[in-house]
Length: 279
DNA sequence: ACTCAGGTATCCT
DNA sequence: AGGATACCTGAG
Image (cartoon, rainbow, N blue to C red; front, side, top):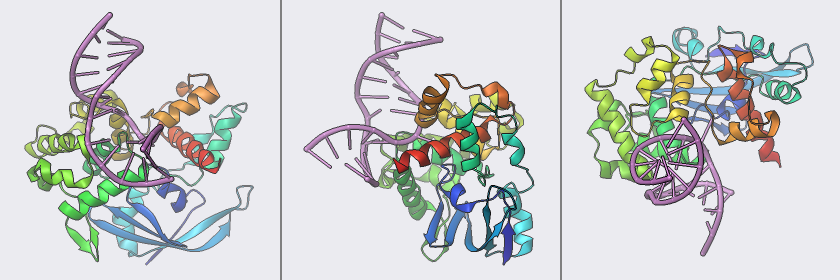
């Protein structure tokens, strides 16, 4: 049992921010998150006033000990980083981005598992987020280790490398099944070492990731951002490109946010999608 | 029934 | 280099 609260932490927003696919609201004030082979239950147990115009923030109860929090989840949620500084370079006249950053306050870039990110974002291409989640759940149920009541870990590269294409086909992967197969074999054989390539710079890392079939520039950037915490990575998907067209005349001034453009990307993505939903 | 989805590989020019 | 096209299948 560990109590976690910060004006810069909003579990609901993180769950819907598109960076993670196994983080769901399961009841009114309850969330469940599966990361690799760990299950985390989160309950919102209260609210506090932040003392400024941003209003309230939530207080959460995590079903782990303080020790478990300190050795894993603290880093996972990137709790040692001050996220407010990322909004400081937004020009005063960029009303859109100011609104996006305000709206997105509480989102953090999670430090997720490299392998899980690789497979998840290969699956993500040309799929809606609900469809991505369905595929990942099927894949986990079929190939992942049972880690709780009806709960399954994300499958390991070893298990997936041994899975046949027809078995993979049961997971609604479509034409992505061979991609997953290829990725699993490359990782398991050591042809791609997901840890080793972390030594490379951002461009070098993208190059390595794109050696995997089904991994293009967008997926590679997502894996870099969410699996390697390369917060300078700026994945451009249909949403981002739509927002850039609409609000920046087709060119986003990424140079203003050197070193952390990925955080800004999250704000634009989340704000863009959430406001579009309301329409 | 029908369109579209957090793209990528492949085949052109 | 840059543009056009096919691609599995679920969700709305």
